[in-house]
Amino acid sequence: MSAAVGLNLAVAGLIQGLLIALAGLAVSLCFAVARFPNAATGDFMTFAAYAGVAAQAWTGSLLAGAASAVLLTAGLAVASYVLVFRNFRGRSLVAPLIASIGLAFLLRSVLTFFVGFDQHSFHVPIARAIVFAGARVRPIDLWLAGTSAVTLLAVLAVLFLTPIGRRMRAVADNPELARASGIRARAVMLTLWTLIGACSAVGGVMLGLQTVVVPEMGWNLLLPAFAAAVLGGVGNPTGAVLAGIALGLVQALSTPLVGFTYQTAISFILLIATLVLRPQGLLGRAEPVR
Amino acid sequence: MSLLEVAGIAGGYGEADILRGIDLRIEPGEIVTVAGTNGAGKSTLIKAIMGLVPRCRGRVVFDGRDLLSLDPEDRVGIGIGYVPQVANVFGTLSVLDNLRVVEGVAGRAARIRDMLDRFPALAERRHVAARALSGGERQQLAFARALMSRPKLLLLDEPTAALSPNLVGQVFALIATLPGHSAAALLIEQRARQSLAISNRGYILDSGRVVLEGPAPELLGDERMARLYLGGG
Image: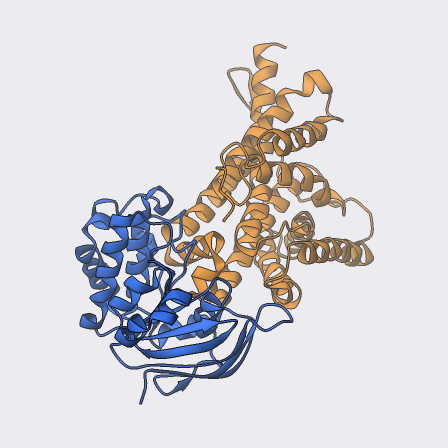
């Protein structure tokens, strides 16, 4: 593999990694605070991509399309909490996990009922790629990377630098003590699901801009997202972001060895290896059983 | 009027009742010990008062308000603080964030300064994650967190459990200062002798019922009860 090919793969891997990081962050936030792995995350992304395509077609603006996708998907995520997941408070993670799988299938079925299985795409202006040290980077890729990085940093800033983020971390740490400290679950959960929706939406629009918009697109990203969440330490949002970026790079750089078709298998192998060898994740810490 | 009146409280987590009709009262500024054998329902009682027991019936009135109709988070707002036996701090949050996170605190910044003045060991380690604190520091942080909301009543679930003997004395000394800060305390303790020594009154539980109650000196002086329920402590 030449240096130029390696650099091209690394750039593609970084962008793919930022996308996985967004999905992984959405999964990790849900696991940390709501305490279940949300299998509907991928379909939130699919919904966002379709919402973005529709809004772009209606307004003629990619920016307006993306902003609409974020608002609508955040609304969808909050609605899914209010109508579905709120009912499982205090139950084991199995019930909300199964419910999230059901919600994922429901969302996909509703989408395909209205838009069918045809491919859709965002309208992106054609622009010449920038060549830097042998690596070819499309201007849209720079926008995607920048938007993803800003979104990831913004979500982490909410989590670590704001009072509502502090309350979310307290609920994630010890829900019973959080209640006994006067923290109201309602505001925390509404903020959580808004962030989950926003992360999923930016990820979905990114994915749609990179390729085409089809009903299965988000579902296919679910395994790498779960792998990032586990690899980063379950319930560790910062870890999920770093692991997502690393996973994207590993997947891309392994392409000359395993080909494009088996890239996702890398996620699966890393997921299983982490669960077997270091269940607390690479950045997580082993906690004693209380 | 008593600060807290518990009348016929019963309930538990599963189908079987752990609490079987407990009556208890606490006057303002009083320290009250609840002692008893393992499995007597001491921790369940304190959790029921805090609203953390899913199935609970009877009557619990705090400062003239019916507690059973309130969520735990609302009980903090009307003046109840709670220090659990285990997992009593947010381990992943810094010391400072453990104090900042408490809701319904008027003059929060000044109150945090008060707490750090009162617990100098915490002031030195304010930016450290709570999980990195020693057992004694953790207990101080748990107290400081519970005191942030200026509670009229502090519920303490075995605050000396798993502490070294010299720290046990410090914790009891700290509890003894609570009435001076206008807070009453309901204290669950295995070290019942030491606990009663700083208490006004005490209750002895057995199998979810009160089997003895009275002024602390009388309970300490009752040899049969001391042998059966108070342990060597």
